[in-house]
Image (cartoon, rainbow over all chains, first blue to last red; front, side, top):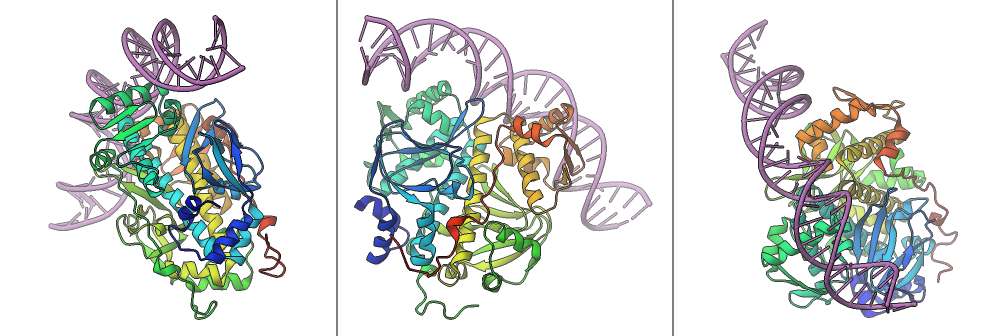
Length: 250
Length: 250
DNA sequence: CGCTGTGTTGACAGGTCTCAATATAAGTGG
DNA sequence: CCACTTATATTGAGACCTGTCAACACAGCG
């Protein structure tokens, strides 16, 4: 298990060596997925979740008439496909945007953590809650802001997350998503996406050449986007293992 | 703890009496919240989650200029506010749409379940994943479908959920949300909401008088909405407690 | 070399928003 | 019980944002 993948798992809870080992043991060897490859398609039976070690992956829902909504972009360290564990058949399609490397985890092993490594299970629960906050923010952006603001909030969000895994220069980063992808994230047409980008470039908010994005003034762009920065709790006091487990309760 | 609240907690995993008791013990006595009352406002420090026993509650995000996006409607049996446990400060405001009754649970107690009642912790994880699926569906609806389809998918969704807790007649139910609320869920203007309702009524898809909604043909309405029904896994095989805990692993 | 995916631009149609006005219902204080 | 206020629902007209259709440039790739 690579360090970077690991750090993101531990950023909320510091896991000890034993706990890390237990988690590492349920991860399959790394599998490479080519750009555009499908890790798991919607409608398939749900047997695994995935740990993304390298690359970008989108999680999307395809509608009958062909419209696609990308509900989430995943970065290294993310656990993919967990939402569908409550379903008979997967809700989302996991697609590699860049060449990606993933570990596979069987659901059975995943839930064994609840007995064999409770703090790891708790850490994974917290990661799932982060995803939920991100989803709520995206829904708010799509439902209640203009397309320019949607793009702004998306770029700021990606900047924040890439900063957490040290893949962001001070204010610029590599964006492997096409304009079609971006449009499918923001709920607009690729054609309109192109115009929105042009607007945000001409107003000086962002620079974009090829796949390199530059956020000229992150703070101002964040305010423009209307969505707040989300600060995660770190090593929360309420998640310390009780001194003698299964003791004083109620 | 009332039976209805309980059934919803157990619909994915059958908890035994001891597990139910452990969960019941961390729940505060029922507190009543009046219609329009705020259970927890966004920006407040996160110290509790809540178990909804009775009534309807919305979870919403308020933007600086006053726009509101309702990201979720909660029904009895739902656990409220869990997404914000990873945040220093709450992301969503929990508002009682009707008079509601809630149990309060401290986060500390909530996470103790990871050591003291792993199956309960797992059950709560699964409930959170259901919320995530619902959020993904709503994002898809708002991002990629017309406002008429958004309303259709919302009504079908509510119909399905109310059916799970037996508060839905064959094809009609009581809807305590105002048109402003509905608009804030679907990401449109209340004025336009009114027109969309009129359209769906005139096309015969739904009936709506006062707060009573009737879905004239649920299946046809579901197809129109473009979103599939979500069937939850029940008593999944991968969630049986290992015969001898902490045994064969890896 | 043509093909396919991607980006770009224009003209126009259409869905949704804004502003304004009115009706109805519910709650309050007299 | 009535006048008054507030929340909610309803309708119209026009502006604006976004979608649709069409065309073209450009790149990577077999």
